[in-house]
Figure 1 (cartoon, rainbow, N blue to C red):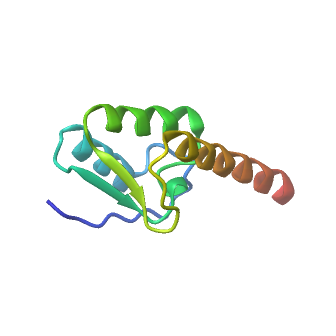
Figure 2 (figure 1 turned 45 degrees about the vertical axis):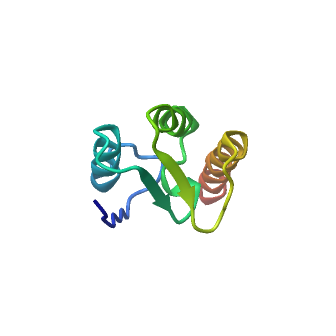
Figure 3 (figure 1 turned 30 degrees about the vertical axis):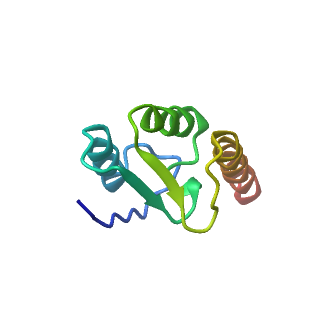
Length: 95
């Protein structure tokens, strides 16, 4: 199955409708690969993002980025942590 999912809400919000749909589909093994534009599009909350990446890999689902090609779980994790920090800093600057 192939599909395209787009959310307009913050990556900090794990209740984004399209995100939830993708995660449910992946966990039900309705896909074998999840392609994202950037890893931070999956989320900007490391507590949500890192277990998701690890859990999907555990059940055999590859998560790949179009613009950040790496197969390293370490690098995917670092990119996720950097996105969370960037989001936090942006929030502080805006406030």
